[in-house]
Length: 150
Image (cartoon, rainbow, N blue to C red; front, side):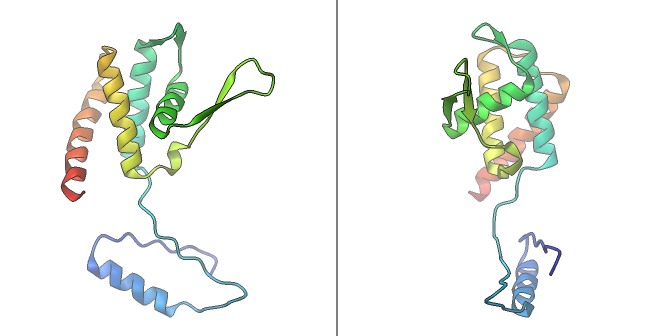
C-alpha cells in the first residue's frame, strides 16, 4: 500500500467506513501497516489569520528595543505558549529557542496561539489591519464553536 488513506471522522457513516477499511487490510508481522489517529492540524484560514496578526504586531510593537519580523514573533508566541527552552547558540553570542513548528499544531493549539497573540497585541495597543479585524471576528466565532464541543 503505497498511498496513505485519510478519513476525517465527521459522522458515524465515515467512522463505519473506516472500520470496514481497517478490517479489509492485510496483517503482516514482518511489514506491518501503521494506523495513526490524531486531531486535524491547523487550517489554511488559521494560518492566514496567524500571519496577518503577526504582521500587524511586527509593524507596531518594539520588543525590548528590537523590531521583530513576523517569523520572529511567531517564535516568541510559540515559545511562550509551549513553555519552550532557550539554549546558547554555537558561538555563545546569543540564544536559540528550541521550538515547535506551527505546521504540526492542532486546530486547538493554533487557536490558543492566536488568542495569545491577539491578547498581547491588544495589551500593546496594536491597531489591527482590516484583514486582522475580519480574522479576529472569525476567530471569536470559531473559539465560541470550540467551547460548545469541549
